[in-house]
Image (spheres, rainbow over the protein chains, first blue to last red):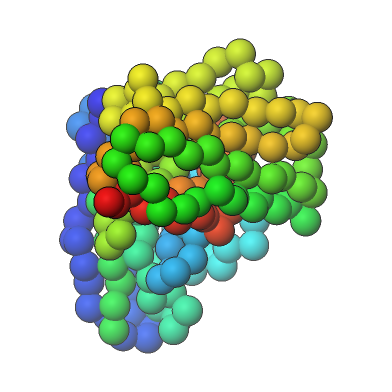
Length: 106
Length: 121
């Protein structure tokens, strides 16, 4: 199985900050990568697919980049509603695998 | 509006069985691939199963292979997960998730709210 490693596991930030989360795949996955946001007690929400394409309705302050094994999610100007846990996921092959999550907290 | 609603979660003893359902609405269910993803308390997301739009192809995580079975009923717009030989480590919130229908993209664009399965004596 492809292992997805995210770092940091948590980040302390303030409103207005720029936050970058990194995801590394144990083998190349081209651009078959998604980012999800999960708020406490809620289901995950798709933010970005194909490594860099913003899902409809997601604010443009979220950007994704990377291909192959190294990917990043950047939140350019953190808003209060962005405090959540973020997961990367590869869909290059089965089993689908997620990173362990990065909690963005105040 | 796309909606996915899971049901069937319960408290079950180790070794027991449970069947989860996911009712889909707001889209043409029979043209989308579907998945089950679970999340143990305080833990991350774990993909556990996939079924193709036709129901002909299924995949499972090693952690559930041989114990869980995914199926779908297009007449009822529903997805199912039959869970047998349940273990304490199967305790989790179980989500159904729709795979995007976009060409070349297999991300999960819609998720249900989840149903809680607790395996304990």
